[in-house]
Length: 561
Image 1 (tube, rainbow, N blue to C red):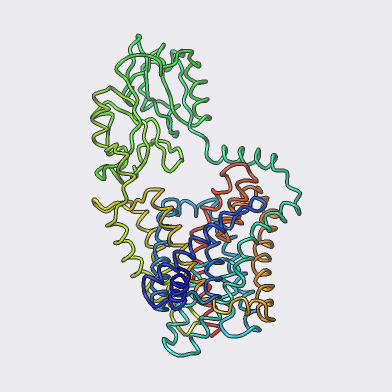
Image 2: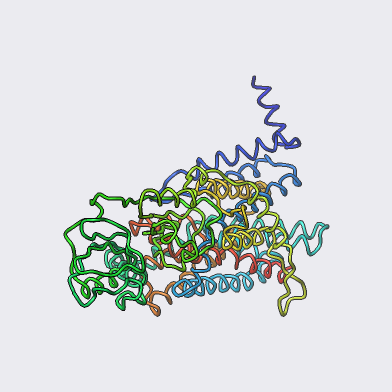
């Protein structure tokens, strides 16, 4: 038994067969996930633990055939980036507007400042050091892949290129650990420097959110002012310029769904859906709040919650669907990815929208058939869009880009191509029957699987004599400079955002996590705020904060060759 185990271990060290390589890779991932699940002072490494277990495996000689390792690394990176793009894509364009534009400009400032620091420091530490410092300090695994791809493309063969890519990987692995905890330290330091009181920040953020995006509310009111009698709902002056919707009407003890042509009568009781300010003006102008709850009145009016799963209604405005005229049904609410949307005539439905419809039972059945309402469809991954999207992503990543002042072309590569393709395709939503939608659970699986395998491959590639390099003089210098590059840019810009722009600290903490694409920092910020509010700022900047380092890392790779 003992000799058999030792023979097996010896075979693993050689790593010649595919089976042995997969066993090594899977074991490194498994141990890393166990390590990442250990909590210390409310912090967990999470999937980042895989990098450290893989480094240990590489240190003791457990590795995989280099060609197999390269394929697994690139394929895992594609899966990870494509899933990220599908996740953030639907809200990417809107994140660039108003507050999102400011957050993204600040994030780009951090990333460019970090790249400049890396270039200056790297020029004193040796060839190909700058991209490794930069990608490790910002924990940007796609940036590392892009930098090493650029180095290999500049000269496909030869020991100097292999040495340069190895040094880039070493810089990444040495600076990565502090890159994981650095953003958390920045949040803590900013809180101490500005003496933040979290309860005050929560109250201010709530007031700010209500002002920027008023919540959708429902009221029942009675018309008592005779001056409004005989006017149609569509042409009423109190309803022009707002997004109020009427979902029910009680007249002469008969419950119905009003239309735009409905003529107002004194004594009518309406259920209105809209923003609080608009509803208050409407009630004050037409009548008073009603003690009658129209939701409890029996009649041929029902409500139904539906899920949009049929492609025939996608990307069509509600005005074009004309549900009220055809079926007598009106849409009361639309929920898209947890955000309440006003069901205006110009709103276009998207796949997986959750819709509340009100109307007669026969009309509801017609609308249910038209919308699909098949929740099982949401939990069934669609493979054709996934692989077609990956093909498009690889093609996009291969497009050469020319930048002034550079003697060579850049490519966003396997890191940026799938990301951009997924963002663009998610904006389209669907092309015919092909829908670019991935269930939340499947998206999480693709992201975690891709990132875990990618980190394991990086660790196995860089693990050979890693600890010897890390503890020698140059390794300690890399570690110290990496810590400086992690902390200084985001701290400086964070101070500017808080002091000059008066940014709410909860938003600021989410922005720090997003600018550094740091999941541990996001978890820490969420626990500190006691809500998911930091995730809003994180999601607003994460797509650009993932893409910009890919270009910066390639520029550093070109200039430091």
